[in-house]
Length: 280
Image 1 (cartoon, helix red, strand yellow):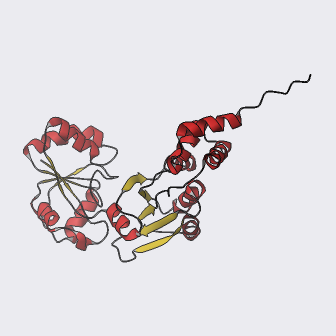
Image 2: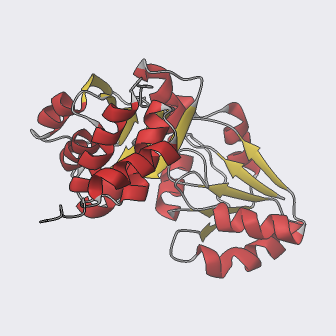
Image 3: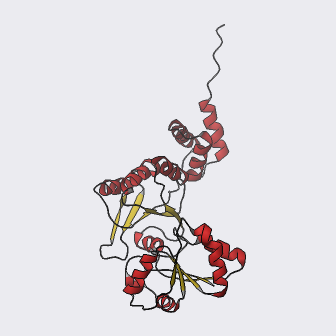
């Protein structure tokens, strides 16, 4: 059996009783960083020293088959450095291989940075989407935000503290300067901090420098009521900024509820040059 075990995201007091029991009895542990696992065992006062196997982004595909075969006869405990394996951490390819091979996969639930950030954000929690780590490059981030411009669900991202200010500026440029954003820093740790404000306000705050583990929670797009002429004007403005007509039409349609076909045809008529007048 493969057992995915959630580990504390900061505060060791969040280690579950089931996690401690699993670490106490485990004979084999596959972990993202074996040094972190050794530190966790010592910090929790666990004397057991299981066989440790390194399982990270760079070797997971190559080791998955071997570990699946091992798990047929031995319980394999799988850990990431913090939180639940497979969630923006190694483990997915292993689970995928295990499912295909008919090996049982179970989990020991526990701390989650995504759910913790969502819960304290003050933004709607009934529907949300987790988008993982934001792209490193400006152009790729901008493209992602454009794809999410009409997303009505609350969005959760991970981000490096070194890129936070730049990412918030990109977010403000694409999703709007007044879009509500919450930055959660060092969740469950001594220096936990939750900053709420608009995208522009938090970009200015982050420009001064931020440290620690970062979760960014972003409010979903509000449904806007537009008439067709206003909708077409928005489409034309998006096209002028470099977005394809088809994509701009889809974005405005999703945000306003206007017909995609009506928007496209009306915008196309405005873009097409009128035939020259006769000189008779």
